[in-house]
Image (cartoon, rainbow, N blue to C red):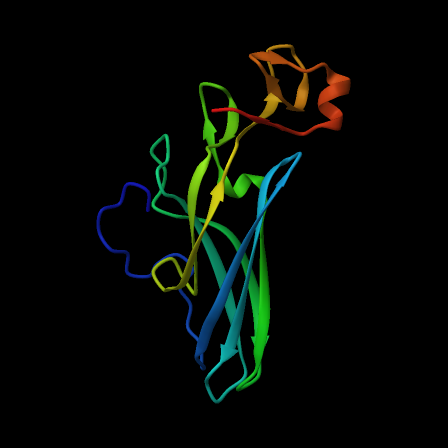
Length: 178
């Protein structure tokens, strides 16, 4: 729905169920690792209906102040949970480095901009039930495909240059100051 201005009849992720679900206690966590920022979202889902049912818990990510035009929100993780009536389960959704990234066609790379990211969890793109946020402190850059040196695979830009093949095989990315 990137350039669509109306309201879709059935939003992305829409589904029907014979029971009802309640979401609670969203706990977002951010981890900074050598291969970029990663996160986890932990929440409780309860079947509040009278029948056993399955729910697809969906996590959307939205940068608060993106440096480029981005979709309103992007689906980045989901999990199916089966619950008996009255049962509650903890659901954990993993957000890898690409969950915060956008593709930069000029650099031919995926970029992670530093800043605040809103986390929206729900049953569909329209049915958002919990929100939270994470702050990414450092920007990252991931090069994919063939770089200017003719190396194929995932490589890394450091200070405007490219790492040698042996170096980029051991480090998937490095945080870059933006």
